[in-house]
Length: 292
Image (spheres, one colour):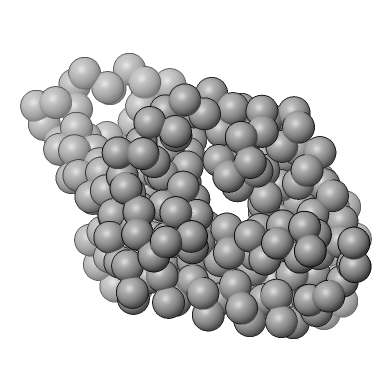
């Protein structure tokens, strides 16, 4: 076996080119992620209705306990909408997003073999592998949460040195925390990026998929990070907007919350599609190279 026959730059380029070829040549492959977009938009509308009279009375005790009475009234209820939608997105990402990822990986694999794919075949295989897929998703979720907690501790220690440490203000550090949070999440995701593909393409269980992923990432860490982190960087503007929603509402109009949430939904769609398809292409390229 001859190793490293494909450079990291070539791997990245071919994975992205292949991803856009799939997106534009077989755009039905992205339907699972489009379904998530629809569910998230419906979720925004449903949550907005839920925080309005008369339905708000049913969640008043919960809001009073965790957020405070002011979040029951306009315009602070729109800030509550953003918080509640964040929780909904996490649930959808874990439960539905995992299934969408499996479907898409299976479809891309089929398409790479015959330039055709069957949702029936992909659905059955994803359903059969769903438990293994969701275990990985939950593992990555908690790994990202752990990375966030470390980053938060580091930020607190830095800020204890004074607001003007390195010439930066407190609000500047807060913005950096959000930016680095996106990058940290991307790095953690990169470390597990081939686990779902190993499960769907090579029929691994979650344990053997992790070991196969480690072998692939160890040899291709740079490419894995680029394929994940670069698309995630497009979410930084949304992260900054969400982190400063109150000030944004004060300077414009409270209803700007809807624009920010909807923008985040569509950028997430782009990120999920590009990362899933490009990393599946990368897995197939690495796998083919190792088998030569």
